Structure formats: C-alpha cells, structure tokens
Length: 233
Image (cartoon, rainbow, N blue to C red; front, side, top):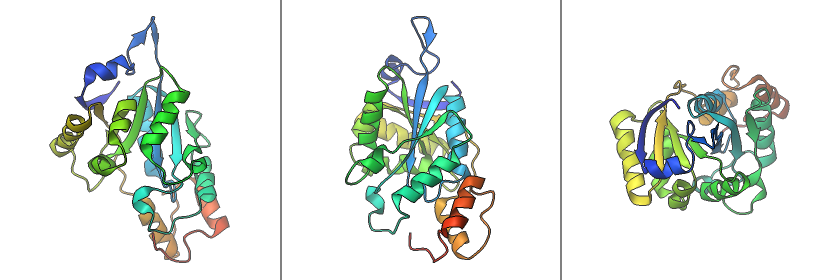
C-alpha cells in the first residue's frame, strides 16, 4: 500500500483488513467509494480514483452520484438520471470502476454515512475506503454523522489544488480522528486543477471542454445541450 501518511486508530484499521494484510494466507481485496454530484464527472475524478485503486490495492471503486447533496440543496443541479448516465460513460473503459445508484434510489438528502453503512453491509469482511479530496476532508466535521463514516471506512484523502496540504491536512485528519476515532490516510495523486464548476462555466460560454471530461461525457453534454443556458450552480 503506497500511502503518504496515516492518522488515527491504526490497530482498528488493520483489524478491518487494510490492503497488504493477509487473512488465512490470502490478501483481502479492498473496496473504494467516491461520491459527489458529478455535474459533470471529469478527469480529476478518474485520476483520483485510479490513484487510490493502485495505492490502496482496491479491486473495485464505486462511483456514487448523489441525488441531493445536503450542502447543495439550494442550488440548481442537473437531473439525477443525466448525471448517472454521464458517470456510466465516464468509467465505461475501466473494469475496476462501477457506478452505484444507491443514493439515487434513496429518498431525501444523500448522506455519505448511510452509503458507507450500506456498502459495508453488501461487502462484509472487505476493507472499505472512502476516497475524497483534501477540501472534503476539511469540511467533513460538518457532515452528517462523520462518526459513522469513520467507523465504517478508512478515509483516504488526496491533495487538491488550492487546498493546504502537508502539515495542515494532517492536523485536520488528527482533529477528526480525535473527535470520532477511525483512521484517515493520505495517498499520492496528480493534482489536476479542474472542477465541475469550471467545466460548467466554460461550457456556458460556448468554449471547448474537450480533454477536461472523458469523450463519452463530452458527447453526452453536446447531445443533451447541458450547461449551455448559463450557470446557477
């Protein structure tokens, strides 16, 4: 496992079978979760997911588009089925990536804590990792039931452009694990300065977003005329 740092209850994490630990002479494959609005999914999502897959020895990474993110309830968001289709197209060429509609089927706000519990129940005995960027880690203390997230999964965090890393990020991790227990680790991933907001704004100006999103997603944006009427999200 190629991690840069680790904070929290290492013994507890090892007991859940961190990658590299052998149980009965066999390695326990890990499962990753990467969530978000995915409006649209872009190369940054794919790069972080692939870096996590390799660093954490994961054999499956679930992409879980949110139906309604609690901190974005006041924003206009592309309808769930269109975002689901873009996620499906974005990951189509990677057999280790799988789209999950757990949050789209669940009524009400989409809480990561509920998703972690559900995927943990579907994959008993498998080490579970919640993959996120440094910006999400800094905000996690304000999320719904971060204790449940940290109890069910190891939080695996990658650096993000414009978000303090290094010592500052480790301090945020120690603060979270001090409050809620669990384990947070950092892994290396190329930092690509692209975001869904940036892509929507560029598309709304009529400019090209080619190479910022996978070709299948670009084709869907063009076919559906997404983001061309302006941005309010």
